[in-house]
Length: 145
Image 1: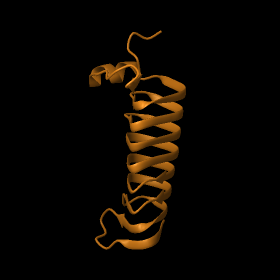
Image 2: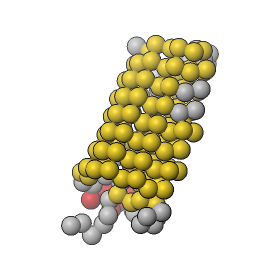
Image 3: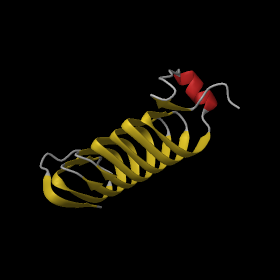
Image 4: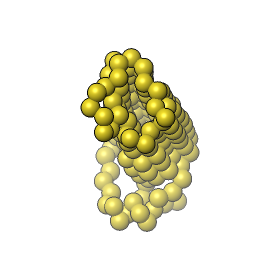
């Protein structure tokens, strides 16, 4: 059993803080289901993560994530629903929300406004579809190679 919890559920357990040094030393794998007011993952997490307000992931999230706001600095694989929005560093899968950003993605973005990085490939479906480095958004459907 680790002395440092790696999955924090805001509202059930409270907000826990961590230093970057702790993060580098204690990254581990966690699997399962977590449902809370908010989820803060500082680990590789695979499973179902439902946060009423927010899901935040520092490293890797695989599976299904749903919240008002989904933020992931690392890689996400699977289906992610952020009612208000998604901000994901690297996505392989599907993201859906009013506003979606993926630094790099291979999959599908569904939302009113979709933004992706220059090396992304997949389909963007939304009112405005942007690609980093291009000034003119494509309306309704954009296929990225």
